[in-house]
Amino acid sequence: MQQAIAVLDSGVGGLTVVKEVMRQLPREKILYFGDTARTPYGPRNAEEVITFTREIVDYLVQYKPKMVVIACNTATAVALEDIRSRVDLPVVGVINPGARAAVGRTKTGVVGVIGTEGTIKSGAYESALKRLSPSVEVISRACPSFVPLVEDGNFSSSETYDTVSNSLFPLRNSTMDCLILGCTHYPFLADTISEVMGSEVVLINSAEETAREISTILHVNKELVGRGEVPVHQFFCSGDPRKFQDIAQAWLGEQIRLTPVVWQVPHIGA
Amino acid sequence: MQQAIAVLDSGVGGLTVVKEVMRQLPREKILYFGDTARTPYGPRNAEEVITFTREIVDYLVQYKPKMVVIACNTATAVALEDIRSRVDLPVVGVINPGARAAVGRTKTGVVGVIGTEGTIKSGAYESALKRLSPSVEVISRACPSFVPLVEDGNFSSSETYDTVSNSLFPLRNSTMDCLILGCTHYPFLADTISEVMGSEVVLINSAEETAREISTILHVNKELVGRGEVPVHQFFCSGDPRKFQDIAQAWLGEQIRLTPVVWQVPHIGA
Image (cartoon, rainbow over all chains, first blue to last red):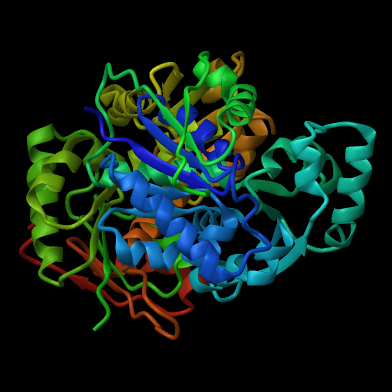
């Protein structure tokens, strides 16, 4: 049986990472867990987020995946190092790939980061960026109004433009040339964000960059699947499976051309 | 002592990878070997390139590096798998990082590749791209006139524009949205290539992407160096050390602000 890439998130946001893995690595099997019964993780304390993340990882490793991906900014900021020390598998979060891409692409050395309040307050992007390149200047801004827009499917209305424009206004008067979309929901707003920031600012899509790093690691570990494999993905959630299925269908439909089968895991999140 | 990243090339072209590693990972120590006595590898047969590459890797592993980077397209195409099976270290070439970046960034699914005749003839980029994503369409073109322009330091004259424009003309009438610079020398011509191809075509700089993958792998292997380290790089070549030193100084000067100390290795390439 093909070994899967295990992807976990506090809810549905991590599906943007799944979508990119499907696009960049169409032969790889994915095992996804959305903790929809306990979403969002943002307002929870670190101890709780670590406990939840451990619980989900313990569940997923039963399926003997070849890699674990924490596709949630909050869980990455708080629990990545804990999980890396607990499981004997490569563990990838969504923060370092975005930071690495920004360090690779910036010419001015000034990098912007937008995310939820929790992610920005944690300083996780800033410390990931500085750890790679101490001379990088980081300008961060929380954009709490963006996730509701995405969850309402409101990607490009004039209300969306106004909200995005107001939130990002303080970032425009700088020499920043890269802006990290530091929340799994933000890629849906990329066109509007780009319109506001101007074409000279490169948007770094964490989902795209995380999928890229998954590809790199599997390649170096000689674990990319071979030709001819047709993956059958599996989706799990802790909350209402029908609701999750509808969103997964809407977000991934183009990639999977199938209704995802979603299994509810009753002992998690109950 | 800090473990180094060992980088090898048939000559000086791999210094573009070194420059990017210095930029993206300023704390990492580099050990570089340029086989200047036997450059170029392009016209040599596969057996010879494998023998030369093995010889240099055997020399570099004496220094106990933490990773080996084959910063030469010809050697990557021919010898990467051989070296990966011989040494118990992560081995990175320059072809997969470029291919992976292109798969990540293309929206149209049409990717261009330019390189030396040897690289294009080997089909290595095309197979790397197709292995990742079978549906990608690849348009390749050898540009034998580009390396001499770079080696003459002729990056942006009107003669350079004309040469680049003539070489790339056949690529312009397509839906390609990513163009891989599949030769370590080409990043020096990036501005001219971009002017010819238009701003809607993203140029994939293999050196930049390779440095990014080095960063990813060191991170996952928990081998990135910590704060406060000041690396002292080492350069080796098989040919005239003064000539190599002049080029390294010119290409890397801004990054290292020091004259590189180059050691000639007499038993290699003699």
